[in-house]
Image (cartoon, rainbow over all chains, first blue to last red; front, side, top):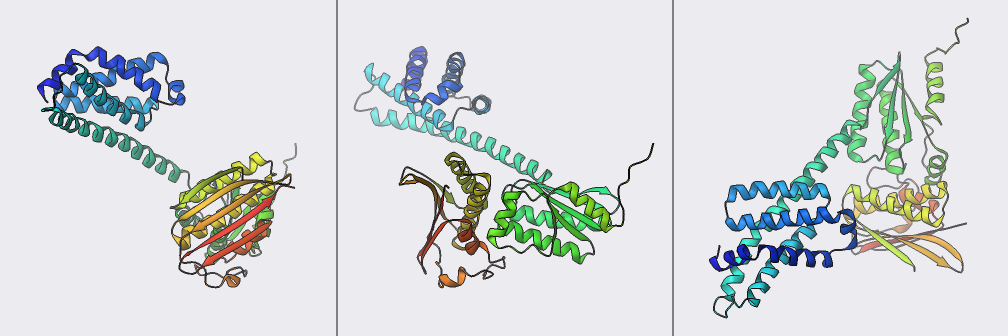
Length: 275
Length: 133
């Protein structure tokens, strides 16, 4: 670190902080300020500036630790990445302007100074972006796992009868899983009838319908019957409009009706016990 | 034209984003649940066609208000390979991807107006409208 810049930042720490907070409050949109309370903003801001200044002291390990701590905190607070980036940029601007005002910048050293500041600010910037993306990637992969977990369970409800409730959007990846789980499950549970419930599927387009038809056909090939239930009225109408032929599949509007039919198909019925 | 928003279709999840947008706009305009389902399904078909055949493109949703009639317009635009024979793709059961072949003719039946322009090698633009009754 250039000694001149270093000294300036050290001596004017408070001035930089107040200046920075003023600029950031002006330049950010209302949305952020509303999310973050005034005290929180002040506290986090001073932490941010503190952190940048620690980097001036340039003990690399300590700084990286502080930086990742701070980034995690900011992500939790919901500060956008652009705001933090902007903050760093504004910080360098304030330092340069402050130095110009104090007359510390001469034509001889100005290019050198700017270069120095840039060299110092870029790694911080990269590190911040890096930590942000890591946090996001972690969240996304966690959600992917969570989604997979509730993807396509097969539930045996009665001897020979299994239910697969589908909830949410079906994409190609999920359609593949549905098919796999369905077929292995049918064999494993020795099902005679499988009920696929689509109450929770928001949109049934040709692709979803195609996958359902294929699944029903595959279930038939392994020797079981497939009943499609949970078809809401609006879904029924769109299926008709699309001109999809679901004649090969038994369809029922509720799971309850589906189970009744499944019992019929396996020559059983539910009776009320007397007494 | 009062209002327009656009979703870029690049991966499969953008299809979901496009139809979510369509559903929200349809709800705002006061479409019933059946028409909401029709509109979202049509968007799903058009967006999936972009994803499957063109690789990428965009789906825009527009609110219409002409002579006191309000409606919703879907514009699906891509710079993909285009369609050689439009009459054929509008036939039920014609498919090049092993699907059901009901996407385009189905989307046409789901909407009130349906207009398709395509130049082979340059791209396809489909404009579909649903009027509020």
